Length: 123
Image (cartoon, rainbow, N blue to C red; front, side, top):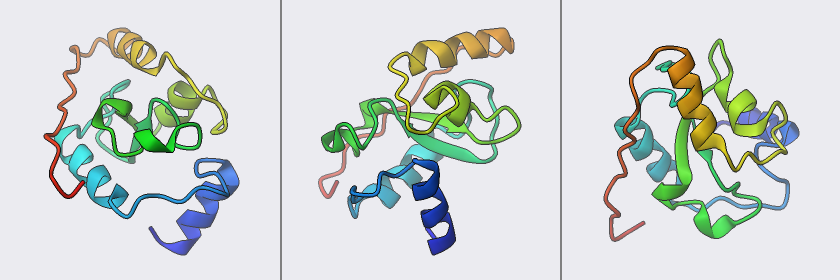
């Protein structure tokens, strides 16, 4: 992540100021997006973000847990902000999986089957 995006994410509240990401996060994120390459809410395949269902700043131990991840976009519908955070990156949405599924239904998209990658020994 370049420094400009890093600072922007901190200012928006996506990354809390006192948190430190695992050195494995970039690999986990890349692998997740390769397997789950569309927004779980609208089906977009651009500007994809890996959203933590239980936020990283609340429970850092779940940062690399594949069961705690969902793909949401920051494209036209901004699903990451609207569904993942209810319009404020500091908010937690414990119902993100349900709301993403309802959004897919609203957009008349087929049910999404998220692929959970196998854990690798180094992660």
